[in-house]
Length: 467
Image (tube, rainbow, N blue to C red; front, side, top):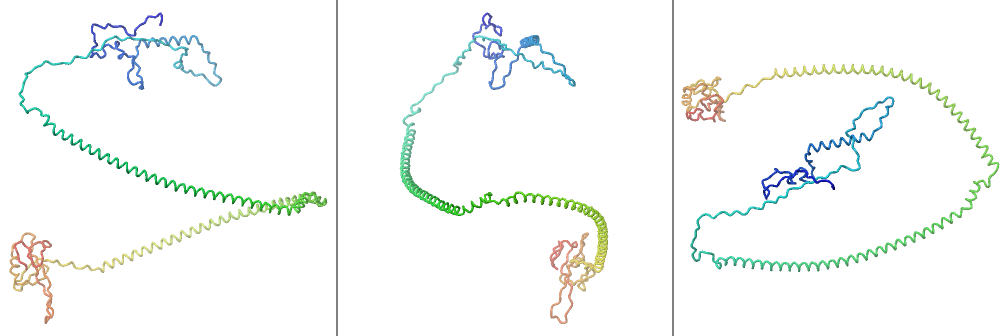
């Protein structure tokens, strides 16, 4: 920076005549405080940095400088031209200018500085004391009206002393309890130590027994190994003696097999005559086998042709027989279906005839006679009441007048004089025996089938007496 004049990024401004900074000032003078400078980044350092908005003139200068650097680079470095394309291919223009980057040994650097105005903070305002207003008032306090320390403090002292004594007693009890717990703990430690000693003694005894057992087992193993070694030695001696007994005969056999004691005539027959004989015999056998194979192939081909023709004839005959069997089966099925259909139709006709005969022979029961019938006539001389169906019933003498009164009474529309009769059997042993007699059991005025009351009670609302 030697030989250069220091310059500020922002133009200097006058402080003015004020001594303290205005607390209500927000952003009127942004260049005078570094906290309001656009180049200062505020916030979390881990968050994404928000780049401040740059000046358009500065951006234009940077772009012009970059354009000049690119022009110089293009003038200094002349790329060789692209060779002609090979036959059958062609070149294609590709835009790569936007991906070019100038490589320099030293990056472009520049320094910038700024200076804030020196302004003191405003001191705190003094405490506001309002002026005294109003009227003073006084009062007279008699003896005994104020606080009596001895009298008022007595219950407080009693409570304090009581709580102190109670707390002392609690602490003494706690100390006794802690001492008792300590004694119990010491007794438990003594018992546990004794048990541990007993356990250690038992473990030591068990360990001694286990060591003794292991020692005995090792002794037994060593004894067993010694016995096995002795047995192997005895067995080896027996095998060696048995082998040496037949060694002479075996060696003679081996020498005889090796040809030490061989006969020249026998060896000539075995080595020359027998191999030639075997070759001649095997050759003859191969020729006979080949002739047999040729004859078998000719016979097999002839038989195969005949079998193929015969199988074709058999297939034609089988298909013909299958068609005949299928036709016969279909005919039998159709015949069986026709027979079953005729039988079903005959069975259906027979069932319908039986149903018709049952319907013709059925005689329905006569409808039941109603319990109450309309009384159409009263024969007072004969003490009879005649019903609408023509039947009659005897009326008791004590009910005749009431029945006549109801019969003569004017009835409402749809209302009738209804009566119920019962058959009274004659008493047994009567001589001569009489026939059963029909007697009027009850009567009322009403509609048939409605308001039926118990026998012997009147049905109207005029207070009729029981019949």
